[in-house]
Image 1 (tube, rainbow, N blue to C red):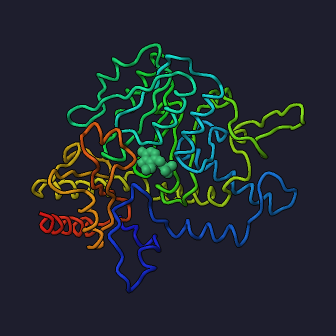
Image 2: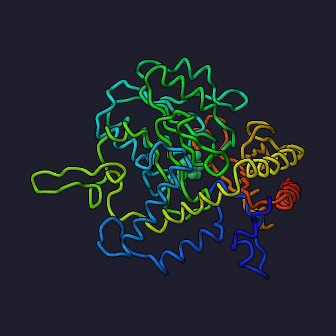
Image 3: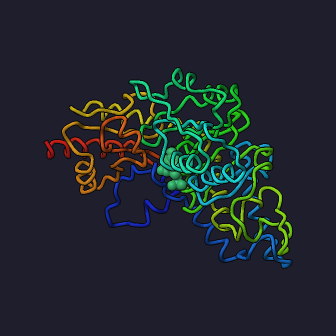
Length: 402
Ligand code: PMP
């Protein structure tokens, strides 16, 4: 796969040195088709949606609702009404947590289960729900190999479990969770399941009907779309039954000072003017990914990740969290004698962009007894040369730090 020419970011800074970009789990660069879709929209179609009688507004509305259809295809949703545009994964999870709160769905003593390697955005909204409802948050521990502990999870599931919210792929460890058995076992006790697909959407096909989950969230900016975009998918009967969360234009059916009635799905959850251009650009990014195809993307990224892992594992004193096999598109390392921040700073000076810190996974770091890691994450435009440059720089940096 040679997708790099599709990304102007890598050619626009001719003459200046561009870092090897291995911070793709934080955010991705954007392909030309996405940049052109943004420019095209504002040059030719810009108008507000769903409101105007004029032709421009109809064109913008059509483009916006086509974008929803693309997102539905991307997730194999049963209907476009199950696709709620959000500002990102964080907002999508908060939407579910807040509407469940408004619906008084949780009683004192009800339980919500998350994973120890969950991102803060898939922990804190549930803690807030617990504070308001008296529900209890429980975290499934990881095994010694840092895998989600299915046996412990099974023991934790009871008739008090109302919701299970887990990542498909951990953003700090790069390991995939066994979401299929997680879902079926949660359903067996009558609990709902929300999947945080922030780190999965760009790297593996997501089929919500085959997965059988109840909610799924992802961010556009991690899949080559602009920041400020994202999708919440929810099963229609669940979204229908939950109350709206933000009030305003678009989400209403009729308003009087005495009483307001609410719009149908998906507009019930999209108060105010949506991120029209952003959502259209998100659909362009999804089509781009689908046009390359997940089989090709996966085999390219898997080869790069394996090269990265085996190269890092060869460096003395480097511990790969979760071992050297089975990582999705990212790997975190820990060095007992070198602070992750020092390594990251030296790598930056050598033009290698990686992420250091707790990766919004402080409970995971606490459970591991460390303050942070150095995380290398690949995308479809990375090359073997990027990996080799990062490995050489890491070796040099470690020699300087020891
Ligand atoms: N979940 C996971 C697993 C993530 O990696 C991230 C982003 N790092 C998020 C949720 C939150 O995504 P965003 O900040 O784009 O809303």
